[in-house]
Amino acid sequence: MTPGFPYSTTRPLFGQVAIVTGASRGIGRSIAISLARAGAYVVVNYRQSKAAADDVVAQIHQMGSRAIAVQADVTEPADVDSLVAAAAELGVPRILVNNAGIGSSQLLMDTTLEEWESLMKSNLTAPFLCAKAVLPHMVRAEYGRIINISSIWGLSGGSFEVAYSASKGGLIAFTKALAKEVARSGITVNAVAPGAIETDMLWNLSPEEKRELAEETPVGRLGHPDDVAHAVLFLASPSASYVTGQVISPNGGLVT
Image (cartoon, rainbow, N blue to C red):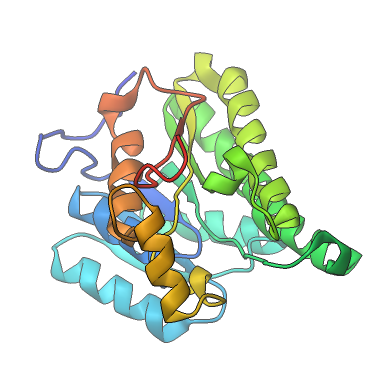
């Protein structure tokens, strides 16, 4: 079922309300701007970076679309409820991009229970809370797009990233199961599993290590946040109505 909004090939998301978590910087920022460029009204979620989130909103306004910045810690149920309620200023949420998350790189033996639980809370519990909060609106509308940002390590596992890999692998399983649960309601649920993207998530790598990683990647470069945003835009579009429970992995051939 297609949404009841004006449609064009240049602005296929015109008037649809999209919530993007962790949208003040990096991949989330690119996703928010990409969706807005396609006509969506965007709820720019942030936890701490208000100035950066306001800048994203300003950029979207310059495009002639609508956006609001909403502070919320999406690991907290009350904050998630407030985030979804705030979206009503723009309309009924039709698109949810669960982008907010944290990384970790260390031996499993050095990983504390607190660190493990923090990763699971940010990378798996938060998408659960956000999806649960928006689903009643999508079910009533008989239309929705939920897109979860996972990782190649959720697909293949990463040495020194056991806890992170487990959280992102769990998110992929969550995606596949929820897709089956809500498909008859006109809602698709998919995941995007980026490879090595040039963002703050690579904070632990030296310039030389980044160069080596780029050389190991078959296309010969690190990814750009826009590489991820393009995949999200496709999955968010009406054209992707027959795509659900899938994982798209923009990783330059690093993992196949």
